[in-house]
Image (cartoon, rainbow, N blue to C red):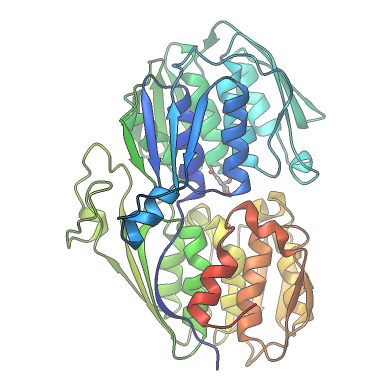
Length: 456
Ligand code: S3P
């Protein structure tokens, strides 16, 4: 019987890695970024800033004396030599951002405030993702930004100064919020955004860490133009979205016991833990790491962990034990807190007792692929009982799924969610187009093999 057993450190959070490169590039001073996520998406951001004259070096070799943990940290370090808010230079060529929506939308905010023009391009999936949601507010700020009927490529002509706006964001999107806040660094006056539901607040936390004049209260956030200065060192917490695949694997595979070390436990991202607990999952969190890079632990729950200057995000360990889940209804405010984990949550729901309904998930159709379709198509093929509606899925738990030939449709999270389903299925599962996993988690296969001691 397959099971997940062991203890692992995860690579850095993708959303936070992107922001760390962006803010370090437009800050004064040099920033060392530890546990940076070397995935295709984040490297697209690195390359874009290199093309705009920022020196970024990757340190992939650790000192010979380093222990395992020290080695992991050093091997995942980048150093960014900041240019300041006005120090970027016009790129000679279009900036190619591959599959990365975060790179494109956040960069659009930064580029709106530059005094040079640039073009942002992406792969065939990114070229189908809606950009009107950032074009509208950035234009209101005075940016000269054009898409192709609201889709990439984007052309942004430089402006000397933007104007501040007050804007209610009509979709729950951290990327849209972040694009406006980043443009706000270059705007005259105070920019204010109001969200319809709380989304990940990594931009706000990191802007604060870099000394920006930013205030948040509930669903509102205000920013005034201010120079950024590097905090010197940043340590990126492990990615809870990557952790989710193993958390759910360990939950549904009997006999599993898993410890995930130093995972980001930002409350805007922990919806998956709350939901799994409600479903009867045996999951514990705690032992937040204090500070960055000193390797010492305190034994406080992550939420109460005092945050010194370099520890801007709550971090902690997650301990998971296999358990029988039960079906529940999931909807409303919690959805943005687990938006990227819904594909693998759908896999968990297939093995829960009774019915699981996941509502208000229309945004999933606008991700790298239509993730409602990609999961329903494949899980149905494996024998799952799933009903798909425009903004909702209804899943009836089954005893088992059968191994099948599946297709990720080129989407990393679909591929990894299906790999977890495949572990629990009877017979062999083949996932076509699984190369896309390197978009967010190049080590996924290696980590899963370590934890299951089987080769996929
Ligand atoms: C992200 C925000 C979310 C998420 C994406 C990363 C970010 O997208 O799905 O993977 O880093 O801000 P939306 O802002 O489109 O919801």
